[in-house]
Image 1: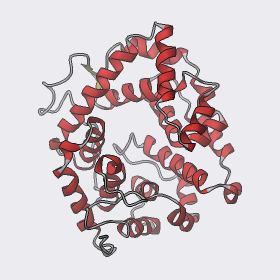
Image 2 (image 1 turned 45 degrees about the vertical axis):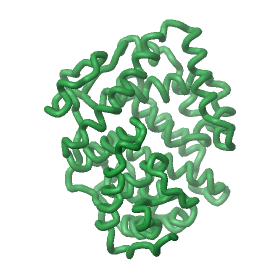
Image 3 (image 1 turned 90 degrees about the vertical axis):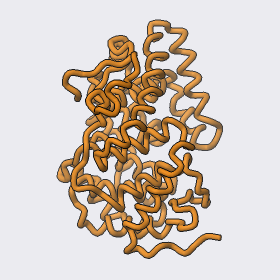
Length: 343
């Protein structure tokens, strides 16, 4: 039985309920999902009780970086692993579109979704991972610009590409952010919105929220509202379609975009809160999938975002800097080293 939605004014109740439910079942979540939750909750609260969830994630990403980065000089290894990364995309319509877009750039996913992802995460923790110099050399030698600015790639996964652009700048292998922004706006000009399918409209929105999220270093700091006025004003102008056509994940991200920009009183925030609260399922204590699936491992992203939207803090917290926290500094993987001046 699906219960009636909780009234829109009970945002704090919904947030607390989801958080309690998630934390009661944290041991059931895969390591990377557990880490995703813990990192975000640390950045919202600064509570060291979430540091060990981030430490679990660190063990995963440092092991991953060791495996891939330390074998970068083996060209056959890179080619084989790049193909494996493409094969793992699956066989659905979105996967097919992504595979087609990747055809001219067969090693792009290897360098971005594997190397950039792992090294940037380790860097966020104030650490440096294994074979770091080798990793930097490999990334600098790869041509990321073509893949980042290709229209078919942008139509296939806009949000991931802006993540990659910011990660590349973060670890010092190149600044592609402005080039990506120009390419993104060329693919998705506002005057062609009516021609966008629901899927492409969602892809555009997801990309726009991640310009803001990536600039915030993923909820570690606020962003300049003026810098992102082109995105925030777009969300304001299109909020009715967003609430109709977007997923709960995207609607929540739209609301959080205004919070990151210090615009908590913007009407869009209340509209997104009302829309998400209406999707809350009191029986399962989660925001379920569009098809009603309450699975926590699959829906953690959507639900931790809901916690953040309903319970936004006055202060965001950097890190966690695992080499400095008493709970984790003596438990770091042997392959990592503490940065003297974390970026």
